[in-house]
Length: 411
Image (cartoon, rainbow, N blue to C red; front, side, top):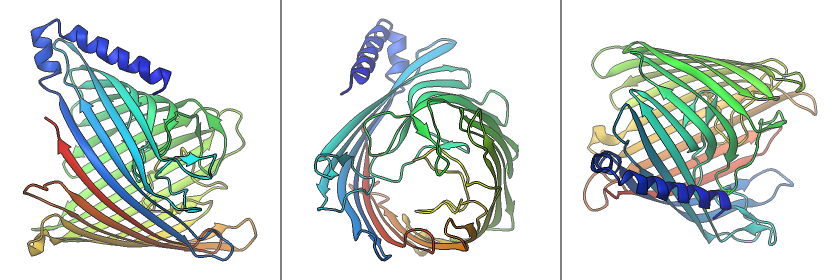
């Protein structure tokens, strides 16, 4: 445990001891608390299919996530503390097959470490429907998205303000100064994917307005200081079409440029996804287009908020245009609740290749998942994720992920 984490634990214990001074405070702080333990078993296999590439990346690991959330102390201003403890254990990783993102690299052996652990602590304060969190953060926002696609989630360090005091309006804003990658135990500075540049400061803010129960509008701003600025606007509309039928329209637009003295940067990203749902089935069609001289910038290791960001690719190269076709099915309609299926195909072209000519790529995904709905193994989930990627300017990949997870409520 690092020196900083030791200080955080001491602060947590002192804060808890202080709160025991009042019986009512105990009832709110402890009585409204929640705790759960998630066990996550993850097998990852990625085959590299092009000539001259490494053979494969393949690892198997076991993760444990302990989530503790307190309630709030009484009064106009309530205070609370949250904790997230994470442990990852290597089950199998052969010679030359590391690098899956499940485990930290072992620089001495060239493979992966046997185990790793990390602790995230978050202080929180609430006034009415406005909440401030400071410390270790995991959240989703159109301009900055935490990644949870490996054994343990990625987290940020900073402050996050969320307010719902105005009817039908949600405001979010904050400041991030460090990022902790999925397989890392250390906070590091941030960089921009494909763009370069590093910074210790990411500022963001924006809001969502629920115009009607069917229509939501959003606007957000993000700044990776001295690297890039990004403006985002979005619209989500659900049109009822009769019993068991609807059409969802998801429209997104982002404009990005340089910040400070960073090199010239120009990207505009347009995305649209239309999903027709009928009964247990959903049919989706998407289109994404990059314009400008640069790729879409986002914090390295995080998830970009793009309609064609899928299992492996983001289809966000300079001037790239891409199309998506997607199909979902919920087997609850056949008497098998908890069993779901998804498949999608994205094709991209018009990419400017460094070697000249037009770059093209495509990716196909398939997810099959099942979560036990009742009995002694309720909440036990199994998911198989399969992907195929082919490209004339990047890696050709075949990938499989098998994830078994179980969440146990502690109280």
